[in-house]
Image 1 (spheres, rainbow, N blue to C red):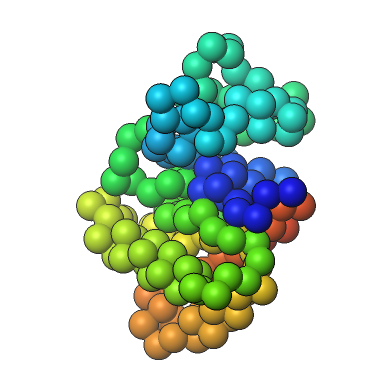
Image 2: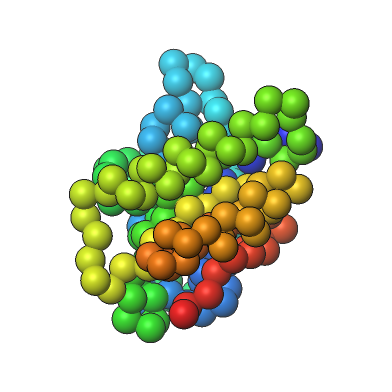
Length: 183
């Protein structure tokens, strides 16, 4: 088992959860930087294999970017690499748009505690996003680990995060998400 959940996996597991909970309308856009998938000849995250194992297929199997479908739902996942909109953008059945900045991270404690830096970096990206509408729900998503869960629980109560209703989500490897509420 890997000790780090890659950012692409955080994004995709969150997409799966939104679909499973029937919170999304027709599609979920997932922005993944190509360097998360591979650099040179090194594969960092085998996105097509991950999606295939989860029951998702694409009409262009030679490419990792594209539209993925599963017979279990009419909702599609559109994987692209356009920056600046959020790592995950979904039109929710409530009529709101969910914009999420996702981060990779360790699944067990490290002495250097990179979790602080990773959540703060995601919050900074979220706060400097170029496109945010009145109907947008903003969130940060990180892997679920003991340290991420502790920070998320504490920081969800921070005055400005509460005032602006910014969610901090933790996503685990079994498909559970904590910290999401529509209110």
